[in-house]
Length: 137
Image 1: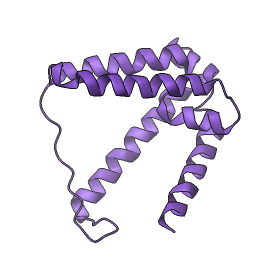
Image 2: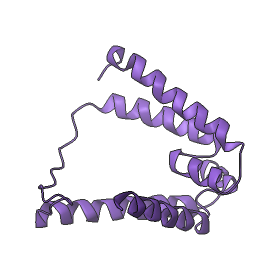
Image 3: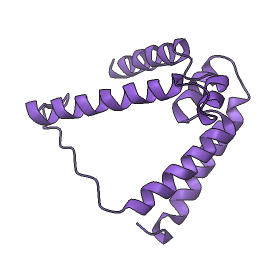
Image 4: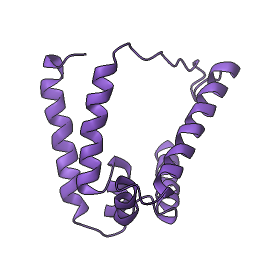
């Protein structure tokens, strides 16, 4: 039954992103060429939603589904890793026109070529797992 909830939330999330054109390669192309504010608006709304949500969780000391307190740890210090990771993520996003969430939405919409992007994303994650101990953290 719990799995069904996640599947429903995933479907709703996919429909919302599709209707908002957040999975559109053209919209992503516009964003990286600074031709439209569309995607920047979506990203800003996501950041604001996360900020508000985290503040509500912290101030009201909300609990998770099992009744345990939700503890949000502070980020570790270290600017460089965030810059490097963000640049690599952004370059991948710009090259393929999709970030991780929309890859599954594109597959679900029947764009089977997104499977190649998924394979690349999984390979990149695997590669990071192999070399993460050697990277400066």
